[in-house]
Image (tube, rainbow, N blue to C red; front, side, top):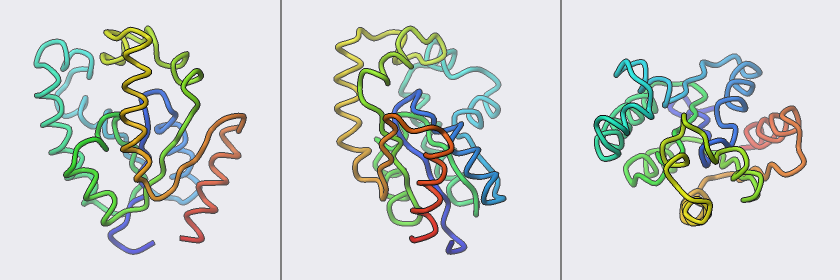
Length: 170
């Protein structure tokens, strides 16, 4: 790993970025940073509360600031928030300087993992059709990641092995 590079996990909310990222970090003996958790720690409230009280625009601006700051602290394994990679500045930083992994599930499994989640404001306030549209729209952007890991019928250990294999051959 070049001294500036982080391993960055991206994908829809509920795609396993934090659980896979933390397992990969343990294997590589690197720090694991969950951007959403850092935002909550920094502001002292949950992301759903941030959306509720300050709105999505406020959240996205703060997310950009803290994500870019985290990405410049190296080396680490970083889990981005579901919408972070949509941000052009964050996406450019990730694509130019880091190793990115898109954790990709089929839509049906993803929908079952996220719908009705009170912890995920965009999911909780959306219909199933709106979530499918969001998944499709974001998938076009996520597909720019260096590596795509298709989750279907793979255990967490198999996914971690696949990530590590891609990382080692990078």
